[in-house]
Image (cartoon, rainbow, N blue to C red; front, side, top):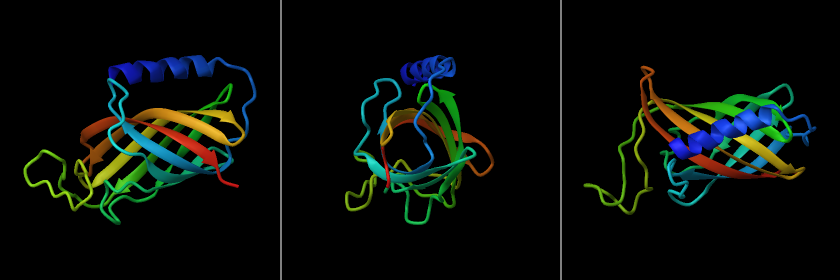
Length: 169
């Protein structure tokens, strides 16, 4: 977490001082998200699809397709984005997690290979914070931190992720 967290802070600092105009972020994007080890950056499994729409005025709507959540367990994401300049943006989204599910991880007691692999989740919410770089009018990439909270506000897990995005037209 320290390695990616340091890179995340450095990118925010550098991007905030840039002056160049960025391509428009507004519109729907097809996104592939990869969960990552925060220390090494190694992928923690296959990528999953999401649909993210950046509205003019700085708001975000998101629908994630991760099978780590049970059907109906995670609501859509809502959030904000900010232009940092030089084709960099911050994005911050929140999504409700409406019920608990137990973990189902390989190598742990009770693992069921017929079910999706999941770390388990508590009812509450998750917050996703990324720095996004629009590399051209149709492509972007991002990385950042995912935080999970129980319904009483207690943080119980954090992790890292990266994403690649293709503009939907």
